[in-house]
Length: 152
Image (cartoon, rainbow, N blue to C red; front, side, top):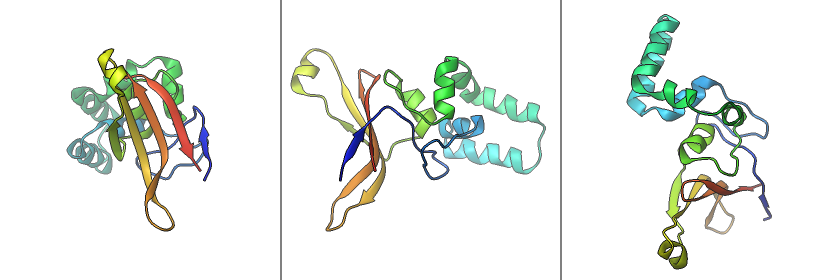
């Protein structure tokens, strides 16, 4: 199976991933919420509460501010579900949601120099004959995206 090394986007925590798929700001807010916060926000939506009340809730729990603080070019990438070199873990979470797995892959020399390397894995897939692979992976070096890998 060939792996492509590219810096493009993927997944939505609430739907399937397809190249070029976009998400809404609501999707981004939901990816930043706890399950309890998600349930409360969905209740506000289901009971047709005014937009001002929903906005107040987003501000109260802090997800509105986390979104608003992102640079416009990063916001655009997040809405396109693109992960770019240099993004932070929070920005990747906004674009792709929480990973299925997180691994520390810091080499001894990197650790000695005060660096930390972490890999986030998304969407486990079973392999024929056993084993598993991931649909996409992102590697952080000192909390900045170093590389992104998409397995097709």
